[in-house]
Length: 153
Length: 397
Image 1 (cartoon, rainbow over the protein chains, first blue to last red):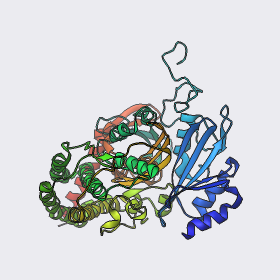
Image 2 (image 1 turned 90 degrees about the vertical axis):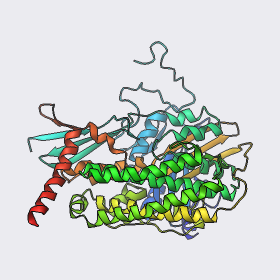
Image 3 (image 1 turned 180 degrees about the vertical axis):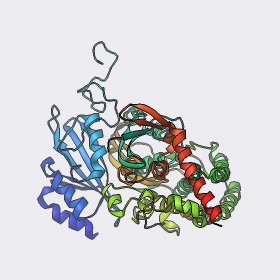
């Protein structure tokens, strides 16, 4: 219980919204400019394990949920950011200081088109290297039909 | 050094669970850098999942992996149970646990066999695969299939374990104990296995934390983390068992962790079979509400993580899947560097990424871009090293 209290205290006003889905699953909404600071706090200072991150395409924008696991207390701390600009989504990379996030940022970049500023090695992870530019498979607002004439060059 | 060479390992093999491609940069015998490329078998399952209804998704994710095929459905149903906040019947929790532990045993035995093969102990390979067979037979007895058991279902399980089958399951796991003890003795007492695996492919605790590795890979580096203990699910908090850890982070530690873990699995299965209450096995979920859920479980290779988001329809609008090897394979970047080529096969194999990839290895001279060795040569190299060690020992005696 102490870790969670500590996290709540340290996040302070950065937590725009807190949702306790259950005892074990806590979601914090934060502003995207705070992500580096919050990730450093959770990973480096609090010693939580970085499980993974999920990119979700929503009507409001692209949401990224960073899942941190608190193995000592059996909780999952989920940090949610919303990137409203869908035309040119950008966020600071946390892979700069967390090797564990390197692959998942590459994955979100290629599947949802989010540019991670400062990522050490932002290139394709799952898709082929000549995947059409500006075609992001997990975006709902795009037409993914590659058989159409002229689409796949 | 002018003669810099790189060795590509991978990417395709029909037996691979997750095909990956390793490019080993070597100087002489020493591995100096490694580049990992994955995605050769990217099937777009996350997107495919958005087109299936919630019941079908369990079958879909079962097909992600052919070896630990129940880990993904288990994580998925945990995510669904979290989303719907349904109370899963007690008996279903026990059945889920039994299936998951039987699977851990057969997956670890498979790894043990392949690891033995790679360092030239083909007897170990044949033995462990022989003893894996009865476990698969038990799966056939319970579910009708040796693999892809289709047991998991949001809110419960699809099939019950029949009372008349319980003695057969008990006998199967009881018979495994002397076998596992034999393996334990064989591994710990064999000086050549020790020489081939001790101090090889070391992942320090610090590196393990930096890469956030999971499962036996983390536990062999001294991190006492196990989702079954730390984030209890299924019936794991209702039975008595221990988390196995080793301190050294080398291949030998990973070997020991897996062998000892199988004995813990036997303990868990025995207790579950005894404690399993009678009653319903399914909560009969009807509607899936709007919301999100996270499920994570300890698969044989580590934490398997699923995130499901529902908008109140019958299909997920987002289903994120993260397999354990996703975190573990990346750590090869530090564990294989500094070792020799002949140790590379076993080091890369030690995180259990389904290493059949090494069979398609080729050594290429970078300056001439010419193939020098292929995958078989690399395994042969590894096996010859063991043979030499054995001969040297015999000479000394």
